[in-house]
Image 1: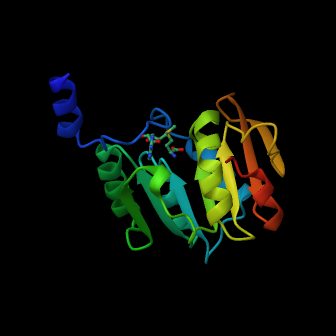
Image 2: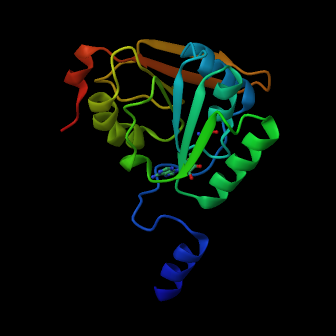
Amino acid sequence: MVRIILLVFGLGFLPQATSLAPYVPTPEDVVDRMLTLAEVKAGDVVYDLGCGDGRIPIAAAKRGARGVGVDIDPRRIEESNANAKAAGVEDRVEFRLQDAMTVDVSPATVVTLYLLSSSNAMLRPILTRQLKPGARIVSHAFSMGADWPADTVDRFVTTRGDEVTLYLWKINKGNQRYLVR
Ligand SMILES: C[S@@+](CC[C@H](N)C(=O)[O-])C[C@H]1O[C@@H](n2cnc3c(N)ncnc32)[C@H](O)[C@@H]1O
């Protein structure tokens, strides 16, 4: 047990954070489609909760938006910073070693997710309370449950032949009824 705790601290994982999903990167062409679905443009502030190697905030920054990524794995944050530098957008992105469940998403105009259905359900109260009307949520592969249907569902086959589903929700005052208490 002590060895497990030491290992966790040694790797720099946030010990009290719940893992919301394993690391599986979204393919770059799917990233582009997510950002297009959410109509990301200059002036947007895009938060990726569980950012992996930072590819979504970096792609958003390339469109003129600002990107914020959070992840509980310090290796992912290191990669994200290195990738942002390599892409020349380090001044437009910020990566934080932080539990997504503790993030203040109120500055976001777009939130991107590639987690799990159960994780989306846990984040729902945070998203619906904090996001402002007009904000968009786009999720790769996982819905928010049958009781919060997406405004748009985008199903397509990638160039590699993978079937992908993207979900888009637009925040408006009526979203309060989707709060999970
Ligand atoms: C499926 S990957 C998605 C990576 C990236 N968003 C993408 O689409 O390429 C999920 C990421 O969430 C991170 N993660 C898991 N639990 C988390 C938590 N509680 N807070 C922040 N990040 C978390 C993992 O470390 C992993 O990098």
